Structures are given as C-alpha cells and as structure tokens.
Image 1 (cartoon, rainbow, N blue to C red):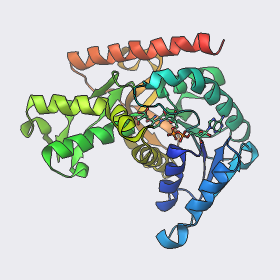
Image 2 (tube, protein in one colour; image 1 turned 90 degrees about the vertical axis):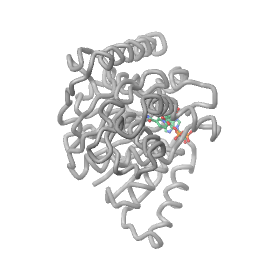
Image 3 (tube, protein in one colour; image 1 turned 180 degrees about the vertical axis):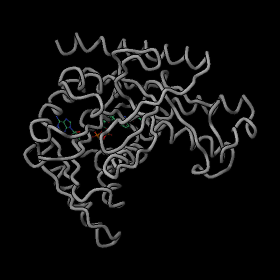
Length: 311
Ligand SMILES: NC(=O)C1=CN([C@@H]2O[C@H](COP(=O)(O)OP(=O)(O)OC[C@H]3O[C@@H](n4cnc5c(N)ncnc54)[C@H](O)[C@@H]3O)[C@@H](O)[C@H]2O)C=CC1
Ligand SMILES: O=C([O-])CC(=O)C(=O)O
C-alpha cells in the first residue's frame, strides 16, 4: 500500500515518520519542490528502521511526480504555514496556486487516489481541489477535525486530570480560530458527560482554548504545529488503508447535510477504504445549529475569495 505525501516540511515529514513507525503503509513517497529536501527527510526516517523496527520503504523525490504513481492515498501539505499573529485564512493567496498545481500533478499519476488535504486554509483548499479538478466527493477529505478533536480531548484531559484516551469529544465546523465548534455538550469521560466533572466556566475555557489551539502553538513555536497534525493525518490514512471505518470529523463536500450545500466543512464521517463512506448527521441543538451556520458563512467567504485569487 503506497502513500504519497506532497510537502516534506514539518507536517509532511512527521506524517511520513508516524506512518512508517506504525507500519500503516508498505511504501511512503515524500515529494517536495525544494531540491534534495524530501530525499534527505526520507533517508533520515529510513535510518530509524533498525532502531524502531519498521519495514516501510520511505523515499524522497524533488518534484518528480512519476515516482508517486499508483498511490492509494496522497496527502497534500505543500504550501506555507502561518507565523505568529496571522490567521490561517491569510495563507490563501499563496497556497491556492500551490495546492491547485500540486493536485493536478498528483492526479496525472494516481487518478484513483484518495486525497487528504492539509494545507491551509484547509476547508477552502479542499473545496478548491474538488471544484476545479472534478475529484469525486468521497475521495477528497480535509484534515482538521481529527486534529481539533485531539486538542479538545487534550484540554479536557488536562482540566480533569484524566487520560485523554478515556475522553471522547469532537470538534465540527470550519478549521479556523473562530469557526470551529467544540461540542462540549456531547463530550464524555468513559461515557459519563464531562459536565458532571467540570463547571460550565471551565468547559467554556476548554472550548475557547481548543479553538485557538493552533494559534497558541504558532505563538510558542514561531511557526505552526506539526507533531499532532502529522499524527492526525496518519490516523486518517490508517482508517483508509486498513478500512477501519473510524468516525472522524473531516472537511467534506456537503449537499444538503446540516442544511448546507456547495461547501467543504468539518462534520462527522465514516472513513474507510472508499474514503468518505458516510456523513453522519448527528442531532445538534439550536445553539450548535446556529454556530454551524455561522461557521459555514465564514468558510463560504473564503471560498468566494478563490474566484479573484485564481482569476
Ligand atoms: N489542516 C491542518 O490541521 C493543518 C494544516 N497545516 C498547514 O499545512 C501546511 C504545511 O505546514 P508545514 O509542514 O508546517 O510547513 P513547512 O513550511 O514546514 O512545509 C511545507 C513544505 O511544502 C513545500 N512546498 C511548497 N510549495 C510546494 C510545491 N509546489 N510542491 C511541493 N512542495 C512544495 C515546501 O518546500 C515545504 O517543504 C501549511 O499550509 C499549514 O498551515 C499545518 C498544520 C495543521
Ligand atoms: O495553526 C495553524 O496554522 C496550523 C493548523 O491548522 C493547526 O495547527 O491547527
């Protein structure tokens, strides 16, 4: 099973590392535009094999898409990350052109691949690839909810002083500082609603910290995060290649679900060998519905900006 990762930077290389270490795919190809960079990252990862005990073949190429041929999954991380003080949306001008040309090249050699979009602003980059390149909607998946939900679970675990893996919680909506919607009402600790352990004030703080989780890390690191993003993508690749049918919040194309049309935005999905196998329409309360509609309006403004940028 072959996976290509375009962009061998922080997120792409971390994703390749996690996929190899966990033996999720038999082959990983890293591709980057920077001469020798993907080759170097691949060689470095391969030199972990004997110490960590994996057998995945990892190779790197400089812009040679022929080496990516017949990939089952292609992860797109190419583009620029934000710097402290910036929003993800500010990256659209540079990343839209990069993402469009990268996905065009990917499709020449892996027309059947399932594509995982990571580059920001992710919901709009997912929409761009779907609309401009005619990829079937089940084969184009934006990664945001997997990461935001893992941050939400982490903040809940810190507030409760309980292991994150005992906590179940999900973030839907756009992957933006103001557009994500941590579903505090549905979060649970081994099936028990978390509001039995945390006050409303603490829950609201956890939700607020989750929403700016990426911005907080960008402020601390000087560039955006990569360990949790890389691991989140690897988690999704695992669910696809091993047909695990995990429920993961992903940015997918909606045609009427949640009252929305012609938009890619985060909703709970079943992710398996066919990519998006089902979109789950969970019952939202009136407040959550209003937040989702507002989030979709904001994502749509960014989608509209594409018309000028790519004109
Ligand atoms: N959706 C999400 O949850 C997340 C999204 N991101 C986004 O992922 C993207 C990558 O972030 P990092 O890995 O931290 O950045 P990075 O700068 O470390 O790596 C990006 C890589 O893309 C390469 N690249 C640029 N143009 C290219 C092209 N045309 N073809 C091939 N490679 C090209 C660069 O040479 C660089 O190595 C950013 O847009 C960032 O905002 C990052 C974290 C989470
Ligand atoms: O914060 C950023 O710009 C990168 C990203 O999407 C995240 O880490 O959630």
